[in-house]
Amino acid sequence: MPFISVCSLSRVHATVARLNPWGLISLLDPSSMIDTPVGVSPTTHLKLGLNDTTSSQEGLISPAAAHVCAILDHIQAWDQAAPLVVHCWAGVSRSTATAFIVACALNPDIEPHIIASFIREFSPTASPNRLLTACGDDLLCRGGKMVEAVDAIGRGEDCFEGVAFDLPARWEV
Image 1 (tube, helix red, strand yellow):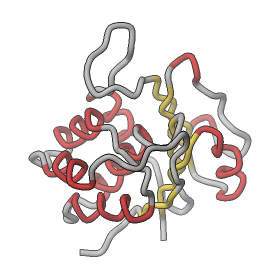
Image 2: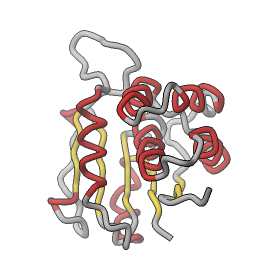
Image 3: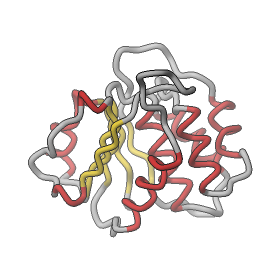
Image 4: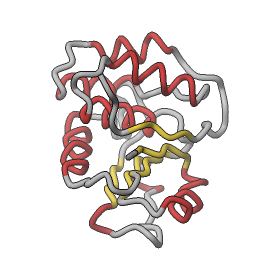
């Protein structure tokens, strides 16, 4: 079964080595962006320079619709024969929101609260970035259900590094 593996920056190389993924999505402050790890093709490594903000802040790059469009475009090429790895700095906010958006995009008939509940069950630290989620909700025409689902699971446990988890890419109705 295809899946999305979510982790922190410190676990990227080990996760890539363990999974031999199709691709990688890096969501980091532009000054912290990483080179493509060995084992990932540069053509399947999406590098998104953005900060973990939930509102516009001077000097920072807030999540925006363009970031979600890039994510959705990137997964169009994913054949799902191998996993997709998604990471941010701590593996808590931007990466969990991205995995949530990808799962919702690939499963338009599954209610977002089901996917969000799975994320909470397998990662008590997950706190999907609300602004990135809202952009995904708008672009996927989910009528606010994705934001409601993230609000319903609430903020995850405080941590320095999130609990890594795997999220199924395909769900049965």
